[in-house]
Length: 283
Image (tube, rainbow, N blue to C red; front, side, top):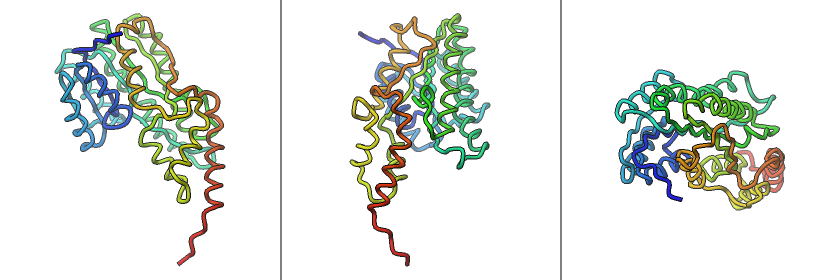
């Protein structure tokens, strides 16, 4: 199978690191024109320099996905510069933990503005350009927690579920315009977020122990790689996927309902670590 994406005009959001950067690299390697955005200027420019070695052309801009005018200006610049937009990969947005006892409504709304509305803003901005050419591909980078709820992490659970519903709705409503929309639902992908989860455990646990605990619920027994997500994004952007829309595809190494057990597993692990770690003497 040869996926030919030469010259395609692609936007990847949240592309300065992790999954977004891996996807941008993959499109660049196929000779696409790649426009990336993120909030961190230094990492964004480093990514742009790297992508310039393979992409047909690169545009990199600082964009806050909660800024409607900023999103629209970025999309308009890409479309004006390259004469249109073929592919949007909506990747920006991280998970957020918390439960009924620890969260405020405002915190959930803040996360929704980044995740749900951030994705919506970009779709709304690119679709007119795709409609004019009667061709478009939108790939929503989502999370398995949106498809299979867990008993913790309320912001991620409900906002990812909303993103998944949005993807399915758009995948049906836009198909008549030959704009195909699909969701990729992440399981445990090896990105910087797992460093953060490990630090949350506190002192007394090795990274190897932590990884073993995390991977107990993954049938494949390992973390996924960002490059493994990128491969599916390339496929969905290609002509090989021309009859796929409103699909929800898990990239999770077989992880399904076991995800609901993970919060309990993590709490039990943290309790075990605290119990065996000597208390620090007060000064």
